[in-house]
Length: 117
Picture 1 (tube, helix red, strand yellow):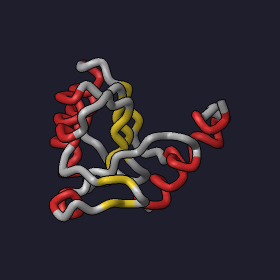
Picture 2 (picture 1 turned 90 degrees about the vertical axis):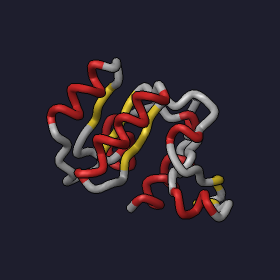
Picture 3 (picture 1 turned 60 degrees about the vertical axis):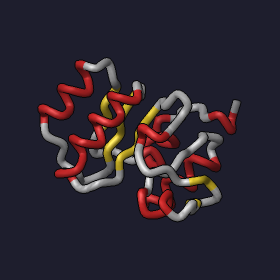
């Protein structure tokens, strides 16, 4: 599912930077995009961090997103995020979307994407 959602977002005109330590270590790419090891390795403004991790790894990913100054975190379907992590992200001024998939929600909500501007 990770690559499918990323592919969809790229097709919609979003810039996606994959975070994958293994790929980054080898200078690899995912869907033609250079991989980085962590959110902190991104050297530009981050609007959203779409998290594809097990629930027990989400708090650390949210901490990284907060430190980077991301505007939002999004977790995927059927992943339970603890309330303390959600509260921490919101207290940092982030939008928090849980148990949703952007590839489903963007078309369902009729959101205008960069490709449609």
